[in-house]
Length: 95
Image (cartoon, one colour):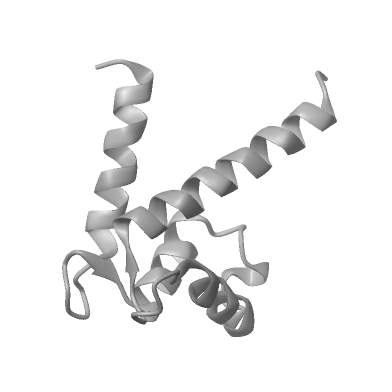
């Protein structure tokens, strides 16, 4: 598989690893999303345990208001984070 195909598969695997622990296998609950962030993006939230930031993020990701984050909503988050990282490293320039 190409690098991009591998990356896509990894995104799917990460979502599947955390979804369904508290119910629906097709979505992430607030608790599942918090666990995912703590384990997979430990530097994203300050100390990885900032409840208020996690709540805000969850509310922002839950576009349809069903109190769960589905795969499409999760992918939008991953894409937005990737864009932010790209912009950061672009501005930082070569070492």
